[in-house]
Image 1 (cartoon, rainbow, N blue to C red):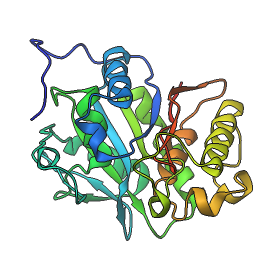
Image 2: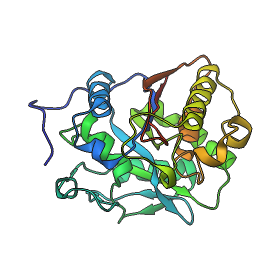
Image 3: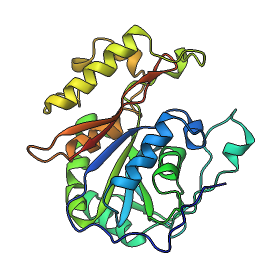
Length: 266
């Protein structure tokens, strides 16, 4: 069950522009393990300005056509298998925001989806950041019809939300190859570490060709055999304003082939 902070009410909602956030969410177990990643997400929730809502673009919601979650009370989706019962027992009862869903639809042309809940790409991170589940949360799907450049364009379309108190969260992994994952390995394979460092450097420099991962990464086929865990980064990078920096929050490759790189933009 969730661990709740003892506070009478959430802090005042931020009035200044919020940063954008990309999180390498990794294993669903990070939701319940007291490890370096869970602690980093918890510290982030304690230090960021308080958002009016979180809009999450997760690797784990792909759809044929663009959709935005509009449920008032989104369910907790346990979209994984083979993990211990205590992980399946976790509920994250954050409210949704139908009003914000309509705003996102206005900005992007997304279709409202009143049934969609929160997958682990969202709640595994937010459970650490906002353990009271007292921030409204909704998700924007990854439209499988669109190219990486079109996903980045959607990210730019979401830009006004940063000035409206909304935290845009991209949740994926910039290196993600489950086919060669090694649960016994605490670090990364050489090719995974090279890709991780190349992406981190590109984010430092800004303006890198993130929409063309093959141009950026010599080990692209190994680093990301499919793109769903890469695409959320494009949304967050597209939200960067001129002069804004990218700051790493977690910075390690684990299990051989999973980058846990997380970046705060702005």
